[in-house]
Length: 134
Image 1 (spheres, rainbow, N blue to C red):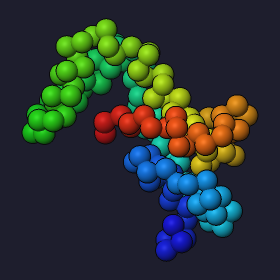
Image 2 (image 1 turned 45 degrees about the vertical axis):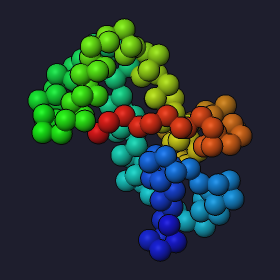
Image 3 (image 1 turned 180 degrees about the horizontal axis):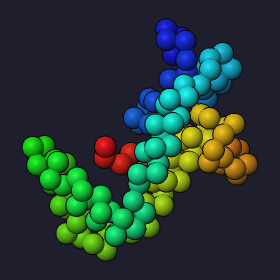
């Protein structure tokens, strides 16, 4: 972050490497946030399908594009074969994790509520949800 002059901790956090409380405090107090990263995270949050029908639309539009990368196609097919497994019980928690991540790193903007801002160590425990596939 210090090398590039902006706080890139949210990027690493999104990838599953959360900053310590001390590092987070240091970075947020000394470096500006990276607005294009916030915009990208908001885009990704909006892409999370929260119902099976929404997932199926995503699947149908992307399945033919991932034929050349078997692991992605296998993952999509496994979810598609188990329709009851992709419900709002999957999509809503992913969006909630994205909200917590956005709130933690960009607390002055969209997706923040006081209950999310003041959760202790939210970045250590409840943001371990894997991001949705690209």
